[in-house]
Length: 120
Image (cartoon, rainbow, N blue to C red; front, side, top):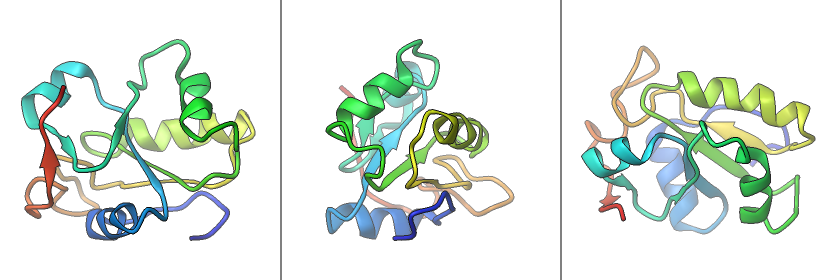
């Protein structure tokens, strides 16, 4: 996985998470997690949390170079989070621009039939 921010499609993210090569983080809201479930194997940290970067750093065990991949509903929040996290010194964060629901970048995790887990 490249050390710079980038993009992955949903199947790539699912494969890398299943191999434990990345930490996949669903940054949507608890209501969204309840409605659709979360990607199987994903951690959950809502982008709206005031301590978002700190929680992500805890998840990465203090390593700002850990390979993290963010997913949201349609790629908008995860795109904004990439820029924010770069400012916070994270160096290996990517995102899934098609998100869970799909966007111009692709059909999305759910439409692709990728595995989900119930939340909580």
